[in-house]
Length: 178
Image (cartoon, rainbow, N blue to C red; front, side, top):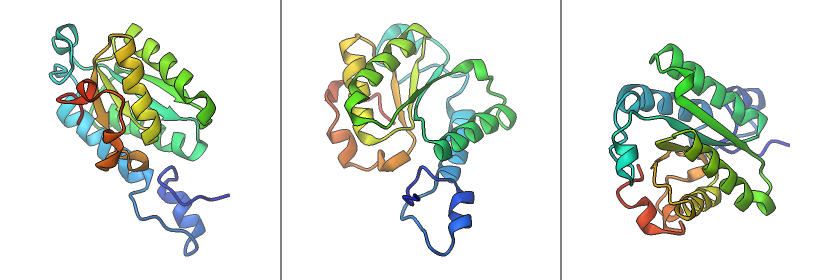
């Protein structure tokens, strides 16, 4: 079944043309834009928006929270390829956590991801996820006393104003979310 949402890449839309469309950018465009921002503006620079001094003094290391959706994983792999080949950011600067789109396990998965990101020294969490999980990530980070930067990629409209308003802890994201 084709849901016609941003988890699909441009090729999926073209294959189903003219029967599907989306009101938002597809993930091919989101991935290209994300790679450009990470490569030109964030990589190899201090994580100045992190909420703890230990993280702000380090060059950025990225943790990506991404759903295990085949079409979306294609776009995530494209992002990694672009950021490495076009912007020369090494793969070692990224830790990814693939999660299942099963709402009954969202809380557990976000807690596991935060533990993994904290242990890996991630300074900047790339929220390539649904808005509900993004809120749970900030809650799990607060519980672990972990205060990284939060980078919203625009996936699933998580960059729209109502999404961050649902986050558990405004102090966790104020001044740390971009």
